[in-house]
Picture 1 (tube, one colour):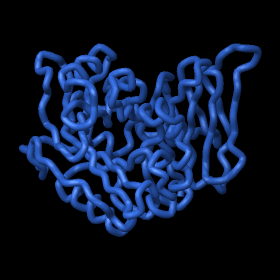
Picture 2 (picture 1 turned 135 degrees about the vertical axis):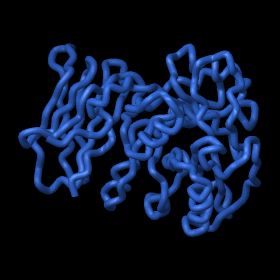
Picture 3 (picture 1 turned 30 degrees about the horizontal axis):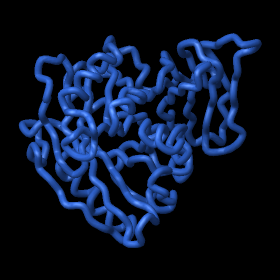
Amino acid sequence: MIRQSAFEKTGNRMLKGGLHCHTTRSDGRGDPADVIRLHVQNGYDFLALTDHRRYNYENFAPEEDIIIVPGMEMDRNMPEKRVHCFHTVCVGPSREDGNGFEHDQRFEGGVVSGQEEYQAIVDSLRAANNLVIYCHPEWSATPACEFDRLEGCFAMEVWNSGCAMECDMDTDAHCWDDVLRQGKRIFGVATDDGHRMEQHCKGWVMVNAKRDLNSILAALQRGDFYSSCGPEIYDFRIEDGKIIVECSEVDRIRFHSAYYPTRMVRAEDGGTITRAEHPLQDYMPYVRASVVDKNGKIAWTNPIFLK
């Protein structure tokens, strides 16, 4: 049996977390303390305040029991205005545990000619002991041939609430399989990228980790999480030649790999399902699953890599 690592029986409680949001420290409309309190009210265990080019460590609502994950968003435009752009979120440990950035450290914006120049920025984020997430590829109009050659991103956004609410983009992992198909092992995260208060708490990750910063970061790096906008996923495994998903009540369960056809199992007669299976095929280099509830809310597993 092969089980995706998020669902290994560790005794940990699955932790709910946000990895991309904005406040009045950059172009967000919510005060940092209010943004934190909103996430606490919605059951979050951890949150990264990733304001543009401004690194943060601080919990602006210290009375709240939430782990603040250090981080920021870095971005660059292309020379031809509105052609496409590169945005990445980075998250890391405390200064005492080796983070290379200072609290409130600021960075200038700028222009890059393409993937080769942005690679240097990704490298600098990683050199500061931060994990890097590639953001909203559909909104950024970034061709897959640009971002799939970037090295060092441990994950990419498969859902972005701000983009979904503003322009119906980056809503269902449209670019993820383009990258996975090239043989790159990259995880998928659901985020908010919330700028307005109503955009927060719409997409999150559920992490199999102890409730401390270093454990959360290590679990993220290993892929010990799934992403959701609502449904819960309880197991994703390969057993006896079958791919198996178990989840909360949903309308349909989908199995994805590098090649067609994508398999979907749908509930009958307006009902719901909580389990589906699909035969494993020898040609599959990886398999992942997504589940969709009656309200159209989605949750995504990370892939099980087979080759």
